[in-house]
Amino acid sequence: GKVSNDDSWKITVTGDVAGAVDATILIKKDYKEAKIDVSYNNAKIVQMKLKGTHNPDGSCKSKAKFSLLGGKVASGEFDVSYAGNKFNVVIRPNNHPELDLTFDIKHSDAGSSYSGVVFEAKRGGESMLKYDGDYKHKIDATKYAGTLKTEMKLSEKSLMYPIVCKIGELVGTGCFKNRQMEVKVILDKVAKNKLFNKFSFGLKNIKDGETKLDVSISTLQNPYQLKIVSPRLQSKIGSNQITITADHNPGQELTVKSSFQNFKFFLKHGETKNG
Image 1 (spheres, rainbow, N blue to C red):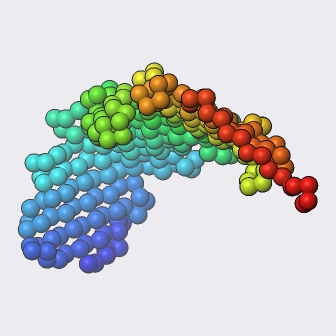
Image 2 (cartoon, helix red, strand yellow; image 1 turned 120 degrees about the vertical axis):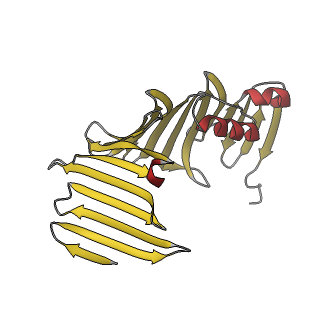
């Protein structure tokens, strides 16, 4: 290859991959314009021309025209912009609906830490897929507490919809057009039991307005508790929920109870009179 140093940087690459390959990249030294040409056996494979601006605040915009295989596969224009932690790409192929992709990074009210993301894909002005995630946390000397909430909206017209349905069939949950999930975690940095720090964990999964899974476990207070709610339990145990508690009196006894068939388990322990 070779590089030219006029008012632009020019990179030319030639080679042979079962046929002649030629590639040329031309970039203006002010970075406001670029051109890309790639050919194979003297036939145009990729042609692209870009123009853009970069602002002192970090925002930027670019416009481009493209052609694949001389326009036989695709041709059109696209815009790219970045401002205020939001990245946007709009592709306008000739004779096809416009594709609009947005990726937005959310920050906390103080603006100093990440608090979530939003991604949305639109086709022809109609939303095909939207994902919205929010993360909040609090950390101090005594505990860590965090919450993650997500929501996914999916159109039946989306290319992702049959894929999601296939995955749903494999795990037994089926298709969905709206899914909400929430995860909560609390870790006590001070209080401990014999094995680990006390904690609580919760997970809730809602699809199209129906709660598919709601799990919570807590060792913050005695008795410890595990609770699972899911419609899939109904056919297994005759109820859509099961609760298990463990009441531990250190040095004396452990009592475990379950809502399933009113199961109870007692274990007494401790030192004998002879030590």
